[in-house]
Amino acid sequence: VEFDKDSESQYTVAGYVPSVKKHGFVRIGNEQRKASKVAEENYLEEAAKKKEGVEFDKDKGGDPKGKTAPIEEDAQWRLSEEKAVKEGDDRDKALNSTEQTLRFGLFMLTFMYFRAMS
Image (cartoon, rainbow, N blue to C red; front, side, top):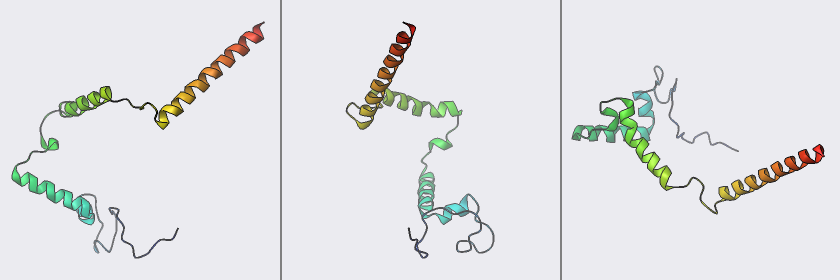
């Protein structure tokens, strides 16, 4: 695998990075957010919404359990509606094969046990 020395990295940075900040270290927080364009755009979008008066879930008061209750209810509802393994899926076939193999193995162990007893 060859790497192009002139290609730009898509990763966020931290530590001493002269190309981003000549004097000092890039620290986690505002400086790191500035180094990542995607994160900066998200931050600016959120700040604009805050100016408009939009209240985010993370800014609401209350205990953590109360704040996560709607998320937990949605997750439980989704679990009750959907099966984790769809019928006919690759996982379903693998699980069926594993189950049959285990059943056969237990049968053989039982068979050998009773054969040894006689």
